[in-house]
Amino acid sequence: MREGLTARPKRLPAWLFYDEAGSRLFDAITELPEYYLTRTERGIFLLASDEILARAAEGARLRIAELGAGSADKTRLLLQAAIELQGAVLYEPVDVSASALEGARERIEREIDGVTVTPRVMDYTDGDGSRLHFGPVDCGERRLVLYIGSSIGNFEPHQAAKLLHRVRAGLRKGDSFLLGVDLAKEDSILLAAYDDAAGVTAAFNRNLLVRLNRELDAEFEPEAFAHCALWNEEESRIEMHLKSRGAQRVRVGALDLTVEFAAGESIHTENSYKYRPGQAEALLTAAGFCAEATWTDARGWFAVCLGRAK
Ligand code: AVI
Image (cartoon, rainbow, N blue to C red; front, side, top):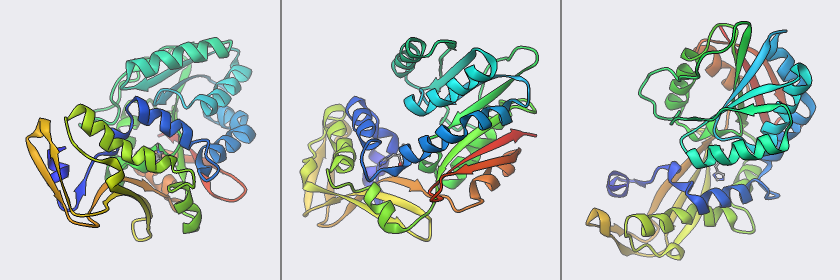
C-alpha cells in the first residue's frame, strides 16, 4: 500500500476490492442492466454447456476444477451438463479464501445432486513461476479447469500469460482449460458497464478507501474521490480510477504516512482488459494448449475458449 500510494501515478491493487462488503457489491454489479458480462457468458453456457463438456471429455470421465470459488449460476450449468454426461462429477474449486470455499461447497452440494465438492485452499494468483497443484486424477479420468467470468482480464498481459503457463504445468496431456474473456466492443457499452447509473460500481471502487480506513487506520473521505472509468484504446482495457475532487492530505496511520493529492489527481485501482478476436486463443497456444474451440454470443461480446493440453 505504501508503494502504491507514494508512486506516480498513484495506484492500489485490485484484489483489495474483495473484502466482505466488496464481494457483496461485486455480486450486485453482476446483476446490473449495464454489466452485460455475467449474463452474456451465462447465455453462452445455456446454449453450449453440453457441447463444451463433450468436447472436453472426448469420451473420458471428467473432473472439474475451477479457479475461484464457484461462479454460482454459471458453474452450475457446466456441472449439470457434466452430470448428464457421466452421472456424477467431482468439483474442485480453488480459492485463497477458505470461507468462500466452504460457502461454495455447502451451496453446491445442497443444490445439485450428483456433485461432490473437494475445495482446495490456494492462492492461484501467487505467480512465483511454479506449477499449480491440482492433485492426482483417477486412471482414465481427465481434468477440466474452468477460469470463467473474464477474471483473466484483471491481469496484466504478462501476468495472464504466466498464470496460463502455471495452469498448463499442473495438467496432463489431454486435460483441458476453459477460459472466459470479455471482448473489445463499442466504448459506450464498455463505459456504461463500469460506470452504472445506480452508482454500484462507484461504491465498489470507493470501498477500497473504506477498507484502508478500517484496516490501515487511514482517514480517507470516500466522497472526496470521484469514481472514474475510462477506455484505454491502445491497451484495450477499461481503467478504473479514484479522482481526488480537490487538493487534500490524507493520513494513513498504520503506515505512518501522509499522502498528498493535487486536485484531479487519481489513484489507479483496476484494469479490465478486453480481448481482440483470436487473442485468447493465442494466449492458450503460447501456454502449451491447443486452442480447440471458441463459443461466442450472437453479438460477439464475450468468448469462451477451450484449450487442450498438448
Ligand atoms: C472480476 N472482474 C472480472 C470484474 C471486471 O469486469 O473486470 C471486476 C469489476 N470491476 C468493476 N466492475 C467489475
